Image 1 (cartoon, rainbow, N blue to C red):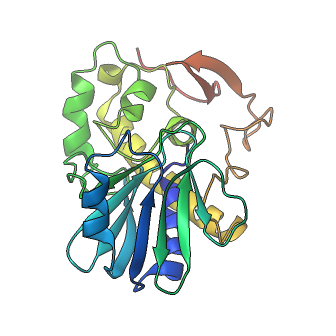
Image 2: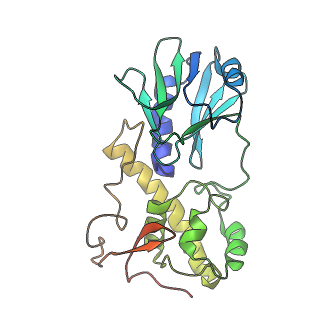
Length: 258
């Protein structure tokens, strides 16, 4: 699943290609997960100029001249493809612009979905100023059993990060993913917040450098702990366990609070 850094770069690249173009047609191929009727999608989006493509959490957000917004959630296996590609399979929906360019969202699992005028979440994005100590401390104080990885994965607590980048953030902060939320001291909470923002910012730079034209998928070759390599750059052996039904990567450098 693409996480915040991937989607940040993807949105930037899509914006360069499609911003200020007018939509000719939106075609919906899978309508079971729509939040509005196909007719509402077409009447709202077609013949509107696309002003901007941005991101919040794990959603891409397309803003149009008439004030409407189209959200795209790729879920686990969703992908974006330029319409000029041949033999695009498993289309969920497709946008074609008046200059005959366009893109399609595909998903062989059928989970990716467009969202018409998505409700703006009051949950902070991981790189926003709202994700701070004042916000996060009371949440951790109530987490008397939950580990920090489970807490950070919860999109109702902080938006945009998932399995891989949580491992990277916690390694950077030197906190074990098994640490209980309420047991983490205040200065280490600050480290988590700082590492969240710095790790994600660095990841965006790395992706732009390695895959500057990416519009789909994930670029993970630069990760330091969530990797197939046996050791971190600091020379510590990487341990891999199952945690919250996902593989979790960490080292003995990381302090366990419990």
